[in-house]
Every structure is written in C-alpha cells, then in structure tokens.
Image 1: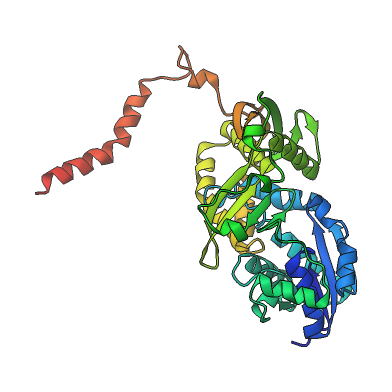
Image 2: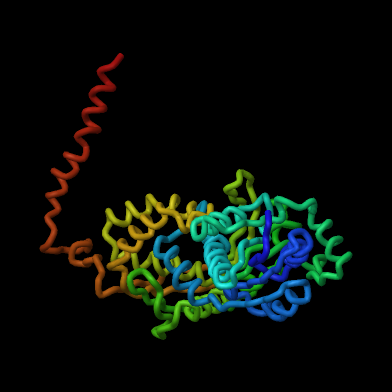
Length: 401
C-alpha cells in the first residue's frame, strides 16, 4: 500500500514499540502514536516521550475514562453481558472505543491509514478492524503481525535490541496484561498451561481473599434506569463510581476469575481476570432488577444475553444487530430504579438487601401468611390447564405399543 500517515494504537509495550519503528521503516511514512487513557494509571507515564523517541512525528494521550464507562461499560452492564458464564468483557468492550478514537484522529490529522498491535491469532484484530470498517470504510488498515516476518516475542526483542528501542523487562513478568478501569487481564507466557495456578504476586487490583479483612463490609449501590449512580448514598460520575467500586472490591478480594475461553478465531485461550468493581456492579444490578423488572421482559432479555455478549466479544459493537439489541436492552431498563445492599467478604460479594420505589414485589401477594388479595383455589384450574398437554401426551404414549 501507498501510505503517507498512520495513526497507531500505541501502548508503549513490546509489540507497539516495535510496530512504530517497523511502520516507519517499511512504509516510509509518518506515524502518530495514539494512547487512550482508559484507567491504566502509571502505565501511561512517559508514553509520549517514548513514542517520539522511537520515531513518531506526534504522540497523544487522550482521557477517555468517562466516555469509556458511560458509553461502553454501562450499556453492556445494563444488558448483564457476560461471555461464557464468567468473562465480563473488560478488554472486549474497550477496543471499539480505542478504534473509534483512532478514526477521529485520522480524520483530524489527514491520515490515510490506521494500525494496531493485535496478533494474527487473537480477537483484538477483529475488534479493531471491524470498528475501523464500520466507521470509515475507506481507511487503510495495517496489521503488522499479519505482514512482517517477526513471528515470536523472541524475534521482537532482537529487533528492538538492534535498533536501541527500550522495551519492558519480560523476565519478571512472563505473561502479557491489559488494564483499564473495568479490569486487568493476564494471558500468555506461564499462563498458557491451564493446570498452572496463577502466581499470587501477579494480581494488581485485588487482595488475596486470604489476606482480605476478617470483618465483612456492607455497601449500597443505587441505580437509575439500570445504571449505577450512587455508592453509599454519594452520587458519582460513571468513571469515579467505577473507581470507588474497584477500591471496595479490591480491598475484599472480589472479582478474580480464571477461565479457558473460546476465541472468535477458533482456538481456546486461558485468561485470568480481575474485575472487582464490575463484579459488584453486576450483582447489585441483578438484585435491583429482581424487584423492578417484569418477568417476561426479564426472561426474554436473558435469552438474548449470550448473543449480545458474543457480539461484543467478537467485535460487532458497531453493527446493525447491536444497535437493535441495545435499544431493546435499554428499553428493558426503564423501570430499574432502586438500591442494592451488598456484603463484601473474603472474595465474595453477596446480596444483603434490595429496595425500590418502583418495586413489583408486593408482600401482600407473596406472603405465606393469611391475605385477602389472592385466591389460592384459583391455582386448581391454572394447574389443570397447564397440565392438559402433558395429560394428552401421556395418554398417546401409553396407547402406542
């Protein structure tokens, strides 16, 4: 391809540091290094200087934390999205925002191409490139891992040494990680053996449950239209609310997950995740839903969650079907107002109470004590009608030799 200017999704790690130099050498083009601040903390320190020192003509870090939580995390959590039973999609949900901002910058800077550091084996390549295509079909896409002859982390380190590119020391961290406000993920290296227990020293956001406080802590999370808006009565912005829940959950060792998941490209992958705030948020949300959401709406919504989560995991955030499903998920949340009280204790988060001014739970109907609003003998006809098809099925099966 004839490329003049590229916007690179740059993290400053081994892969993207080498990609930056490789793009300059291979395409003889200008490279703008873009980093999204999604809550990585100290990982962003010195990133701009490092990018410029490696050959970028421009480097920028953009604070997208509020947009990330408000427009990506919250919509997914309104849908109770979870992939394969455990994964709360912390990496998956960040990629469409990073790619979206790359396209914004490319259009602002007159760049004709975008690039990313995803390998040819993973899911991120799909997530990035489907977003690029959805938002700017004419943009050129460079995926170095699918083009170059550097086929291993070892060859990348050699490339860096020859060109004097500073890269993170890998002996002390024999795995890769990805961090944002929603979670930290760990994969590769020593974690490729699914029998090996993660090193306790690996975890960043959460204490070991064994080292968590011996006394439980009770907290309250308030919701409006399915979004968390308060913690212990204090109203917080989306990003600050998630920071607060991460702090509370991390203190008590909440949110660690170790799983083998099915990648979109066809292989299985072992991942270890820390999602303290997200775990609390999901449990609290379900508690408030349980008293405010209509039964049939809930059951229909729940039947669509696996498909919705798979669309996020597979990179279809900006697809027509996702727009349709998100509208449905949001409509289902119109009555989800209330507060959940939670108990945090040594790695667990359990519901201790829930209340709402819009509660559909009516003690006068549900009570086991005497009441004057429900006729128990109505159940006789109800059960008889529900059992009619079973009765007919049984008669037919018994009549067949």
